[in-house]
Length: 376
Image (cartoon, rainbow, N blue to C red; front, side, top):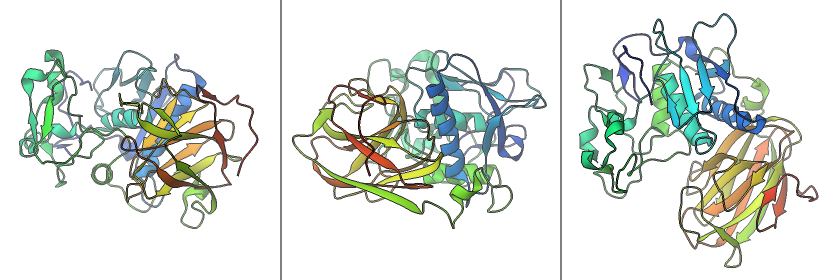
């Protein structure tokens, strides 16, 4: 996260008492600087579509990212440079490059991209709320000195919480060891039994905050393509694939995990028609899912990662919605939230057209060039 040299900042559920942070009409023009492959640009734009559709109300636009045009006075520039960071808000009349930095190694997952885009929209870290000391402890001695500004707390004179509750599940909340100098916790929840620092999708309170900040309503302009997300046409064509994770299933270290005791199965996924598609699980076990573009390499589980989800579908089931292209082969990896868990599951896909599932059995690398027949 980065700041202009002369602007007070808005934050996640921390609305600046002033003007100039929000983008007019919720529209954020963007350009993607040279330095990304076509596949990497696809991951970035897919994350944009995911954020747009997550906060939209009945497909009526709340915020929108679109390529910049010559008449746009302000726009964000997405660059493949070191780290994951973004300036906060639009900040008109401030001279600066409104840069969103997404390093190709480490930052190109949907959750991380949406985190930075929320900064660009004008949202801060959850642990910067005025009431944060009632919910978390900040261990200053464990924080890298040059990164301590990320843990600053803002008072009610500068910000407005929009009357939203503190949200441990916010996409904008740091994890427990963020910027640690010694692997010890830098931030600890006071409430027991809660997890902080997820990078899967916006929480319900994140969605509420964006809608409040940008005055979103169930009217106005619809997001393109309108037919794929209208109530009458939403996900009317379905496909399902059932399988079982067993003690003989392959195991790997999930993205973000060090232990290699997660059973998984992987499927090649293609769609005949580009559009929005939804994937969800139905299982007696706590499922987890990853979606990759073109290649899935078990030994490098963050490479080509497009999206991941744990329990957006409720009842410990994954669910996510993405814009998929007919010209791209995707790899869907089904695993579990906890280690050493086995059991049956069903993946249910829905969208404009029937989704093709092909189970992949290669144990070392899964590629779009794998010669397999089209499945159900």
